[in-house]
Structures are given as C-alpha cells and as structure tokens.
Length: 361
Image (cartoon, rainbow, N blue to C red):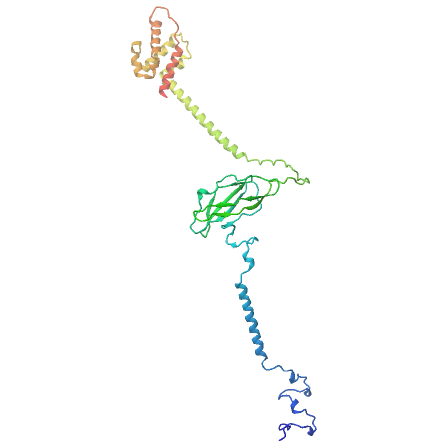
C-alpha cells in the first residue's frame, strides 16, 4: 500500500468530484464553508487547556490581594503617631510634655475672671507628690493668679492633679499670655516637669464700634424691671393689722387691769378720789386714813405703824413719811394749836399708790 493512499471510503481527484485532500479535511462533525452555514473554521478553535489556566490566574490574583490587605493592617500608620499636629507621641487622655501626661486647656476664648485648668496624670509607680513643696496659691504675674491644687480620680482609677489659674486682668486688645512651667517634686526620683503653654485673652469690650444706626459707643442704662408690689403690699397690710390688733389687745388689757386695780386696791381708790379733792379739805385726809386702815386691816394710829409695815413690807421706804403724816393728822384733828407747814398730801398718796402697784405687779 502506497503511503499517499487515502483512507478507505475517501474520494480522490480522479473521481472528478473536486473534494479537498485528506490533509485539509476537518474533523468529523465540523461544518465546512461549502455547507453554507458560515461557521468558523477549525483553525480558530481555542486550545484544549485554556479554562484551567484562567482559574489559576484568578487564584493568584486573589492571594495577592489578601497579602496586601494583611500587610496594610500590620504596618503602623504615620498619621497615628502624631497628636494635635505637634508631632508628640499620642497618649490616651492627654499629651506627654516633658515627662508627665498633661491634658492642656484650650488655647483661646478667655476673658477677665475665667479659670484655666491643666490636668496632670500622676505616676502609678508608688511615688507621691511632696505636697508641702508645691507652689503656693498666689498671684504669679500681672495676668494670672494660681488657685489651690486639687486632686481628681477618673473612672479608670487614675490620679490627676488639677492646676488652675484665674485671669485677673483684661487687655485692651487680643493678647497672648503664658501659663508657667512647673516642676513638681516627688517623694522619689526626678520631679515632674511641664512646659509653659500660651493662651489668648480677649478684651471685655472693643475699643471702637460702628456709629451707624443704633450702634453707639455708650448705650443708655436699661431700665430695671419693676417687681410686683401688690403681694408685698398685702403682706405688709396683714402684718400692720396684726400689730394693730396686738397693740389694741395690750392697751385693752392694761386699761382693764388699771380699772380693776383702781376699784380693788385701797391706795388706788384713794388716789383716784384725792385727785378730785382739795388737799386742805378734811375729806381728803379722811380718804387717805381709810386707805391706811384698809391696808392694815384695823384702825391705824401712829403707835401701830410697825404692824402696818409688817403686813405691807412694800411701804417700808415710806416709814418716815407715814410718821410725819400721822403727826400732822393729830395736830389737825386733835390739837388746838394752829397747823404748821402744809403737808404734801397728794404727793404722799401718789407715793403710796405706786408702792402698792409695784408690789402687785
């Protein structure tokens, strides 16, 4: 058999059918151009191992993406190493300045009378502050006055030292002042030191304002609000009525007591009647004798005066006047000799009435 012999059943050129040679024959089941279907030729078909290579490339890309993400998480970010834009190492709750952790106050927006507070985290290694050597609370400059130190414990149990300053002056324009640096002695080891910090202090009022419309340099005083006076007037009226009632009750009681005593006490009755009589009349003398007899509970004569004084000790200061009264009375009623100097009967009766009243009160 010749080497160029076609397989069995193949057509040759000699058969006159114009069929292509065996070398150009497509595989079984493939469509040719002659079939009229426009299918692609056999030469454009992809190789048999392409899907495997595509899956391998996808796996390599996915593994690379995972590796890059892992490195991005593990490597430190330079932006995390800065706090407040100053380049200092960041710490939780403060900025490390010269050793201790400090929570600085805001650097702006202060005026006269404001308090500026720094918070310093104290070390937790057992060292303590020497409180006796801390700076005193005093005025430290023309702008600041240091307040007493205070201690504070946060939710995590950490100890903080509060250093407060009060602004005691007002500038004419916006001015920067410095909180002083501190050196706080410890019980052991080096002292805690902090750096100075600048803050801005503003004026109370601007030097110039716009003079347009209602914007003037000096504004008129605002009228004070009128407090409602009706409740005050009602309370005052009630208190005045209560005071008037109290005075009226006291005056009524005093008049009633005086009237009762004037009717019940002997010398009170004698004094009330004697004011209506002439002291030179015998009736006036008899009125006073009757009051003395009633007080002594007997008919009283000069020799019986000690019994009267024993019964009414409040008349003891008037012992000499009583003896003189009875001597003048004996001369007036039982002697033929003319009366001597007139006796002050009304004044004597008034003295007896006062002594009696004082003894009863």
